[in-house]
Image (cartoon, rainbow, N blue to C red; front, side, top):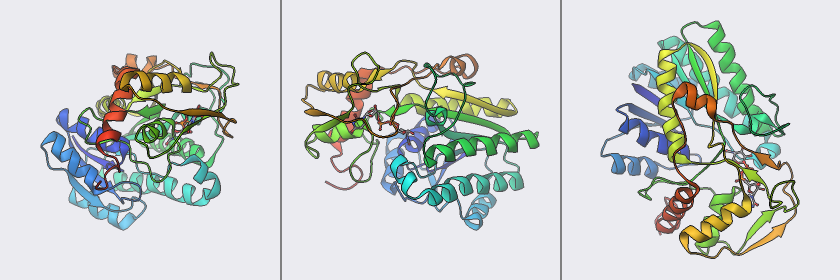
Length: 338
Ligand code: WQD
C-alpha cells in the first residue's frame, strides 16, 4: 500500500517507516520538522536501502495537503504528527488544540475528497486518565488530566464519528503505552528537544554524562518499590503494530481501538536497575517529590491486539535498555553532528 506518514521523521514515525518498507509498503512522509529533522529520513533510507519520498509541510495547511494528495494515490494515512509535551500543553493549550485537532480534520477532508479509506491514529494510554484499576482494557472509561491527552481523546471521537458517517472509512486507534528503545542499528532513535521529560531519554543522557543525576519522582506510591509503574514498549514492536493495524484497516470497516503495550508493568527503579545491569553503567539518582499529574500504575491488557491484529510485543526490557543506550552512545547529539 502507498501510505502517508504524517510526522514520519519523528521517533515513532521513523521506526514505523522502516517496518512498512520491510513489509513491502511504500511510505511517503509529510513532516514540518518542528520537532524532528530530515536526517532521520536519510537514516531510514540508509537502513532500508530504499528512497523515501517526503514533503516538508504542516498537516494543518489544507492547500499543501491538497496538493500532496493530488500528486499521490494514497491507500492509507498513519497520523503521527502532533505536539506531544504534557507540561507544555498545560501552558499553551490553544496551540495544542488548534494543531492536533486541525491536522486530523484536514487529513479527513483530503481523504474524503480523494477516496482514501484507511486511517491509523497515534493515540495514547493517557486517554484513560487516572485509571480505576490496572491492567487497562479498551472498554474502560476515558478522561484526561491535561490538554495533550484531551487532544488525543477528541481525535479518537472525531475519527469514530467520521467512520460512522462514512461507510467507506476504516479507522484504527492505537493507544500507545510508554515507547522506549531504538532501532537495533543505532541509526534512528528518540531525539528530544532540550532536557528530556521522559524517563528513558533522561537515563541515557545521565549515562552519557550530559546530565548529572536522575531524579526519581516519588517513592511512596502504592507499588512494590514505591516508584511509578509503567508499561514500557520497544519502539520497534510498536512500529510493527502499525503494519498490522494497516492490514486490519484495509480489510475491515468502522473503528477499532487497541492498547499497544506489553502487559507488564515495570517501576522506575526496575528500569534504572535493568539499564545499569545490561549496559554495565552507573546511573546516580536522587528520590524527589512526586511529579504533579503522575499516576501510580499504568499498564495494558494487550490481549485484544493479539487476538484481532495478531500482534504481540516480542522484545524484552533488556532489549529496550540495550538499544536505547546503543542509540544514545553512538549519537551523542541525536541527529546533530558531534
Ligand atoms: C515514566 C515514569 C515518572 C522522568 C508521558 C505522557 C504520555 C506519553 C509518554 C507522549 C513515571 C518517572 C520520569 C524522570 C522519573 N506522552 N520519571 N524521573 O509520564 O508515563 O507518560 O510520556 O507523547 O502521554 O504522560 O512517561 O517517561 O515521563 O515517566 O522518575 O526524570 O518515570 O514519574 O513514573 P509518562 P515518563
